[in-house]
Image 1 (cartoon, helix red, strand yellow):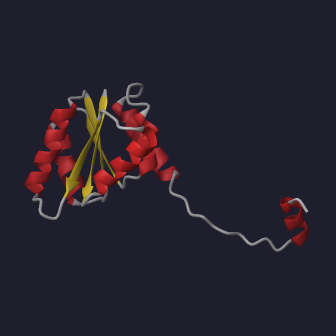
Image 2 (image 1 turned 180 degrees about the vertical axis):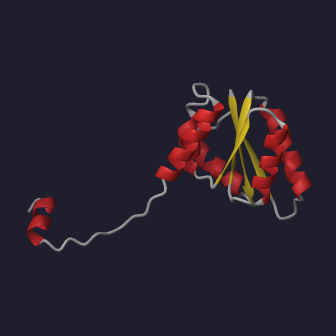
Image 3 (image 1 turned 60 degrees about the horizontal axis):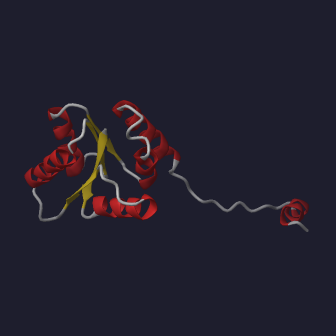
Length: 143
């Protein structure tokens, strides 16, 4: 089974995990690694390694907040030292929610690809479009 580790600056990881738990309940195979202002990158790496040991999975998918940030760099470093580990950055909640229910069914590569696809697809903007055709407005409003 694939384990998920979420890491980011401040309490990003704990916040993302809080949303996940609110929506789908506590998940056994999710680890959280916050990178606090007082933490060194060495401590961050140790926290990530500790999560790998604690989760004890066949593979790992690590989600981080910012490309190029310390959580990303240390996660990449870890992924080069252990087998079956992928790192995704620019994390959003929908990408993790989508794969939680597929952890046992998909390979690590498929999980990574699915997360990327959903993450990009769920970045949306709300736009109000003014309709200048009054007849069309009446039909849509049921008048």
